[in-house]
Length: 138
Image 1: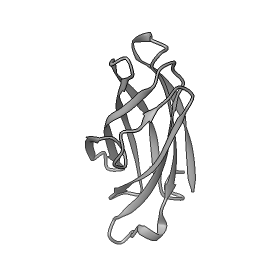
Image 2: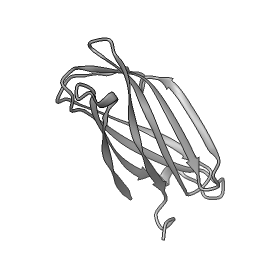
Image 3: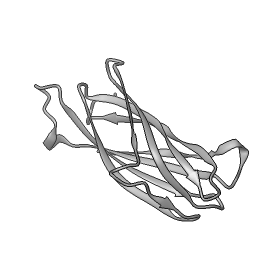
Image 4: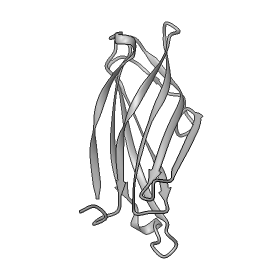
């Protein structure tokens, strides 16, 4: 099962130079999940499109992961998948990562802290998206 969540345009301070669009597709991984152990494994596929007029580099990430019992975990780190990608205007950077929950449904939201080629810092918000095993949502 995969779900595509709509992206959002993230314009920092009303400046069209910093316009990053993020879209997410999620996937339940049954072969890595184990209901008896309360281990539900998901992949998420992220596309980061630079719709602005200047290049930007992704410096850090911040995730807020909430499971079906409303338990919250926050994750901070440098870059994504070991990279701090440089994204030129009109280019898209794609990557896949994963999350493990103790419930069959949950959600994630977050942000990427970016720096533009002119040295200005801005945040690109990642819209909330759902992680759900098949038939978990009615």
